[in-house]
Every structure is written in C-alpha cells, then in structure tokens.
Length: 67
Image 1 (cartoon, rainbow, N blue to C red):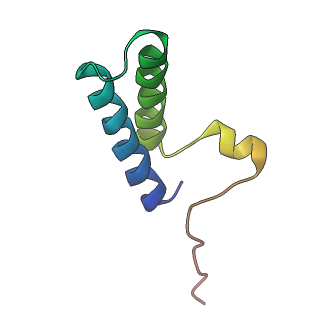
Image 2 (tube, rainbow, N blue to C red):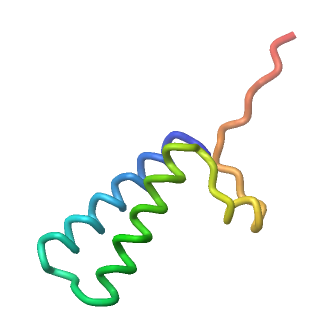
C-alpha cells in the first residue's frame, strides 16, 4: 500500500468518526461508518489491504533495481 493511499484512508476514517461522534450520522449507518473507519485505520497501520490482493491492485510505488 502506497503512502498516499494510507493518508487518504486515515483522513476518510477521521471524517467517518467525526460524522458519527458529532451525531450527524446515527443508527446502523453510523455504526457501519465507524467499523469501516476502523478497518481503514487498521489497514493503514499494517500497510496491507486484503481486498487489494483479491482484485489485483497495488498502490505501492515500484522499487527501481540499482545495478
């Protein structure tokens, strides 16, 4: 997972948390957003997203071989 992807996930998780804890989004949708935000933070911290593996995405920049 690339750095930009990690930052975006953390920002989206922060927005989800704000929406839930400010009372803007409540009920089942609010809980879903909090859980999804938690998953975003967790996958950002470990730099791995299982869903990316299933669909074949890779946002990590390629490392150049220096010979």
